[in-house]
Image (cartoon, rainbow, N blue to C red; front, side, top):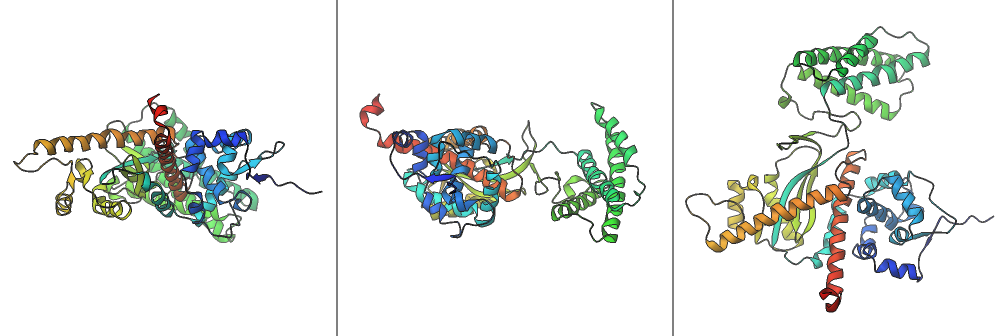
Length: 447
C-alpha cells in the first residue's frame, strides 16, 4: 500500500489562492525574500527540525506566522490544520483528510535554526531586500529596550530552595533508592517545614530573610557534597548530560550565594537568577515601575519606521557606546546619515565630537551659551518627537502584538531568534501595507 505524503506543494491556481494573494497575509508573504532566506541554510537539510519534509521555506514561514499571530506552538499548528491561508503562506497544503498531529514541530524547527544559521545573517538578507522600500534613509533613530523572559520574579531564597529540592528530592534521594544505599543524614525535612512557614508570611523582615538564606546555603553545600560523593563512588550513576549541566549550575549558584552573604550584589558578576535559564542576567533599567528586568537587552535602530537590531545580549551593556558602530552599520546598508535621534544618554562628548566631525545633526541639547537657531530648533524637536513617539510606540507594539512581552522559549539562542522574528514580522507587515498603498489606484486611495 502506497503511503501518501503528509504535504503537497501548491503549484496551481484556485479561487482560494487568488483570495490569499489579495489579503494582507498574502501581501506579507510577497514582501519576504524566501529564496534568499533558504539559501542561508545548508543544502542537505537532515536531522532535527524535520526540514526534510517541511522544507526551508516552511520553517521560516512558521516562525513568521508564530510572531504574526502571537500564538503558542500548539495553537499555531491547530490553526494550520484548519486554515488554508496559513498553508498557502508556508507553501504546503494539507490534503482534505490529513492533519498535523506532531505538536513538537516548532521545537524541532527552532533547534534546527539554532544549529544551522545566525539571526545576524538573516537580518542582512531582509535589509537588502527591504531597503528599496525605505525613503528617508538619511534619518537614523536609536534606543535600547529589554525583551523580558518568562520567569517568576527571582529572589535568593526561591533560587536556593529550588536548588535544594533538585539536589535532595530529584537526585540524592532517588539515587539512594535506586542504588539500594542508605540516605545520608541531612536537615532537608526540617528546612522544608521552615521554608513553608517563611513562605506563608506576607512580609518577612531583613533578619528573617538573612537567616533563611544562611540556612539554605549551608543545606545546599552539604547536599552538593553528599551528591558528589555518591556520583564519584558509582561512576556518575545514571545522570544524563542535562542533569550534569544542571548540577554545574547549582554549584555555581551555591558559590555566588555564599559570596553574597558577605559582599554587596554589585560586586558579583554573571549572577544567576534562574536554574531553568541560567544565561539570564538582571538588567538594571532604572524605570519607576520596573527598575530591574530579566531578559535580553537590545540596541534597536530605526530607519523610516522599519526596526532593526544592532546588538542583542543577555548581559547589560551601555548603549551610548554603540553610536559610532550604529552609524557605520547604517552607512553600510542605507548610505550616509545626516540626522540622528537618540535620548540624552547618548549625548557624551565623544559622540558629540563624532557627529560634528561627520556633519550629523542630532537632537542633543546644545552645550554652552549658544542656542539653536529657529530652523535648528524646529528640526531638533521634530527628531525628538519622532524618537519618543514612533520608536517608543514600535517597542510597545512589538511587545503587545508580536509575542515579545514575555519570551517563553528556553535557550539563549532560541530566545534571540524569537525576538528577531517578532521584530521582522512587524517590519514585514509595514512593508506589505506600504506596497499595497503605492500599488492601489488613485480612486481607491481617495475612497
